[in-house]
Image 1 (tube, helix red, strand yellow):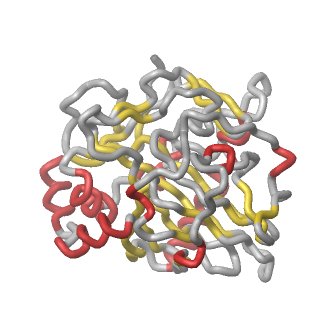
Image 2 (image 1 turned 30 degrees about the vertical axis):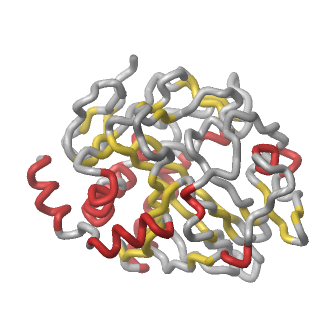
Length: 320
């Protein structure tokens, strides 16, 4: 199966100029994946499946305060369409060009933005310890690596416009970190949709990302920001260390904006090496049923846990 995948993926490899562009600006795209009508049909079929969390790896549990905040994580591990989405050759072929032949997907998340929701504040993520309530990194690159972070593939499950909250990037900002992830941010759900910065409604899902700034007097140069308008069914690729944010949903329509982010790494990177639970955004859930998904090549390092694939391509997660 891997040989077939490699043949297919070659068709979607990035050119040398595209690779150079990605390394220079920290992002590339958007690329077409689904036609809008096709994506809309997929979304209608997907919605009832997302509401059923019985097979989700982070099930809702009253004993875990706030766990509903994690209910939209890693649904590729129990929903067929999402399992197939993260392995699409249009995505994986381009990732192989950037990460090498052996690639895993370690996390997926939904990012809904409803009418009236604030914009997401500017942020960068290197090892993802910043929202975990501890100083334990969630991903660890080898010590001799030139960089860290993860590659995010953000797919517009609905249209993404300036009016409904599309992404914003500051090109070239991925080469240095403006935030210290060894610090711990304070979570306060009362801050959600209740923060204004420099006259703009921006927050970070109950956190104040400014708590992580290396220089407390620094602020992003928003004059360099670019808005990533995307039609429904397109995807864009970017480093998590790229300064990124989103516009607020101005409420000009009653439709939410929905993005689906899948995060990828080369297999030599360790995932959750120091954790047996996931603590984020006021919630906590066990990692007992978590596993990475190998989307290209092979695992030659054997330090990450991988899920098994069923006959229809859906990952099956066996208990520890």
